Length: 260
Image (cartoon, rainbow, N blue to C red; front, side, top):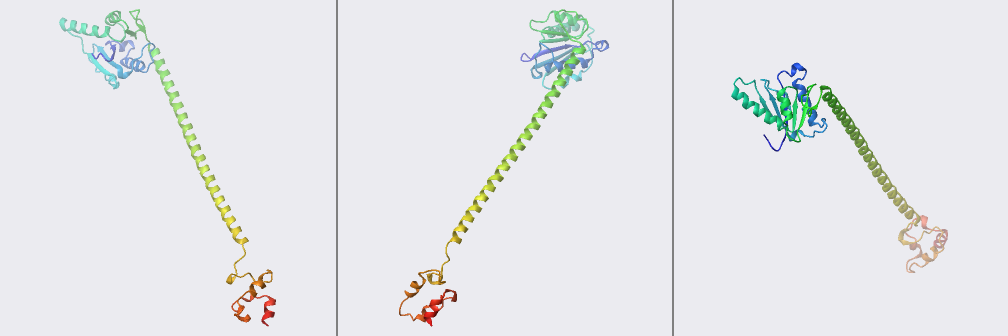
């Protein structure tokens, strides 16, 4: 036996099925035990060593479902000879009495093992009339009720997890929408500032007077210094040449009279 694992021993009698204690009930009880549904018993599947004891030729395939537990079988038809029968009795009784959890139905061997069980061991009796007072009576209804409760709790946990997942998805979607909205606002603000800067530069450019050819002011009569600038042209240039090449719009009336 593995000393590092806690031993769960099941004594399944050949006639238990006829007494409405089928092997499936033992399997269901072990399932409930590993799920924490048996008060006062806390053993996880990976910590357990399940031992099935039975004077039967059944293969008990149902117990192989416990993949994380170690599962052993002390089974077989009853011995016909005294010596092998005695050896088998001692072996089975030693295994049962040293179990951390012993599950029995009824009969002398199970009752004797429960009476001799080591300190700290727990006996669970599936029979309606357990022979040992220290054995805790567990009925089919108890196991079924516990299984239903575990199923209901598992369903509620799945429902809560699904609700939490949906809320998380909604929260992430809202965060993404808010982030996208912030990016759009920042982009719009950047475009607004760029357009405002462009309009400001355009206004400044339109406010400046246009440069005239030859770097002179427009000769449209609106500037008082236009005549003075014109008269300051070099004297060696004939007067008629002073206006040569200038657009007609730049010639003011007094300049035309002077040429005449």
